[in-house]
Image 1 (cartoon, helix red, strand yellow):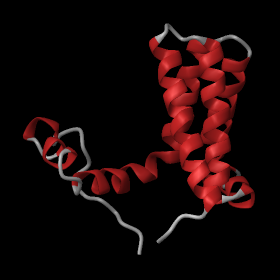
Image 2 (image 1 turned 45 degrees about the horizontal axis):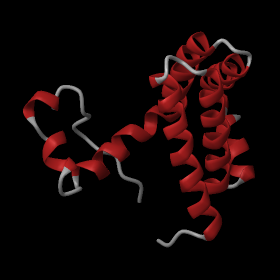
Image 3 (image 1 turned 90 degrees about the vertical axis):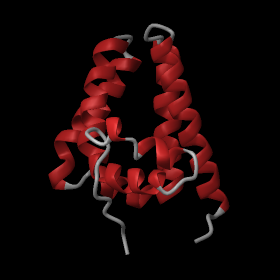
Image 4 (image 1 turned 30 degrees about the vertical axis):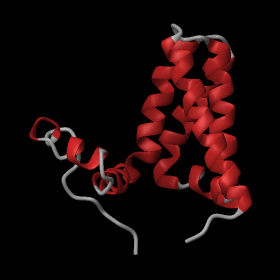
Length: 135
């Protein structure tokens, strides 16, 4: 499956969003970097799956608690409460994107260098054993 140009841009925006978010956390919860990371992450997700699919994903009935926490956390970060906002945002992120983790770990386990690391017995308690792949 090949990515379109907008999806490639979306992957880059999402990666930069995660990078800026991590830098904001490492620099003692710098609100500016975290806000830039949040905006880039949401823009990247929208570019990858499209505006309509993004709205549908975030407005699903079973994920509404995660959406409220995720967007509320972003609002708190933008309102200069980065530590509390980050905690709320992480809770919402896990509720929204938690279903994708087994798929991601299944993909990572097949990579040459990362796979043996994730298959180490010490990490077997943390890393999901079964990966659900989409057909």
